[in-house]
Length: 468
Ligand SMILES: *[C@@H]1O[C@H](CO)[C@@H](O)[C@H](O)[C@H]1NC(C)=O
Image (cartoon, rainbow, N blue to C red; front, side, top):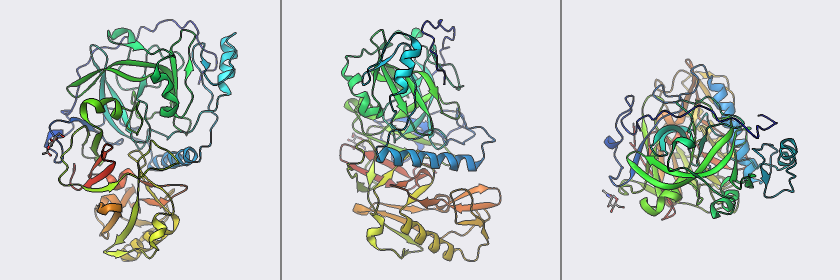
């Protein structure tokens, strides 16, 4: 992170080259319209696993799985800090910016930088390694960007030329506002600027030229800071004018060369809420494995085949998706824990967490029951945060049927690939771990199910066979 800011940064000559919007027909994917559960009036985008060779911005091929797990633990830690409302100190700033909540002096860039450095940034949710990837078009003419999709955060942002402080390497050219005829920055007096503090959990700031500055932070020192902006967004073949998003001038921590992030949490600045007046307050996805492709669909869905559980509201956070886990069976037998053990912690469903976290008592009982059901399989030693490991690969081993049940009758009947994760070519582990302050339904368990987030009816649905 640069500490001295280029107040008069020269304009970069990094003009975005117009590339055609690629939507659901990426060469490496099956077509979204072949999947069941999709409704023709929604917007459908291809979704890629972060480690899929078909991802337009794959993670480094040599990224060890232990690094994925370490990052996953950082996401959990930042979520825990967020729920506990503990601010982290992540100083950052931008061209002559003064924070709306501090008494900044604007004498020099360095002084401003120091004053902003005293504004504590709240932890969001660490992003990148576990998050799925899609494409989004922006500007007029539209150019296409690789974006991570995150149900744990609200504001959509992407790296923006001239990258006043810092841009990481991304796939394709960086968005250049000057090459979009429909781009506009948002002033500090706009209501959307006020809405930033709820959307990012950080105060907004105001540049010397009265442009609203957002600060999105994700724990694990990932962040994006830049100008709140609006422009035409293009998703698949649909466009919407005046979409509010962050034009990032200081960006760090996204892996895999994505340009930015699409926020799908429950907040009026999220992509979901901004599109909802046209499309309806719901989205659905099927998270693929690393060797298949799935979808993100915004708007209408076919309600028929889902089993539903109510969204639960929590005083801890009003933008995350809380649900109620009520029971787990292994080979048809309930775990040996009281039913209150399941609700001893709040439960969040999250697209970007890789490994499901369960209350400690529930986790221990699950680990024991799975180990007992697989007692013929040689055990392997623990791997990172995973302590129930076996010699072999998930696809070759006989894993017990494990069902997760939620309030209202929704269920996830886990296949072996949802239960066990291969950590190297000779070892597979139970893809669950003990929770800290919240239980999390992670993405390994959601893979190949269709999951619908119906915010209007305040319910979440699961259906098998979404994208496998
Ligand atoms: C598709 O969505 C529309 C609009 O919400 C709805 O009226 C229709 O019933 C849906 N189609 C199916 C097959 O569910």
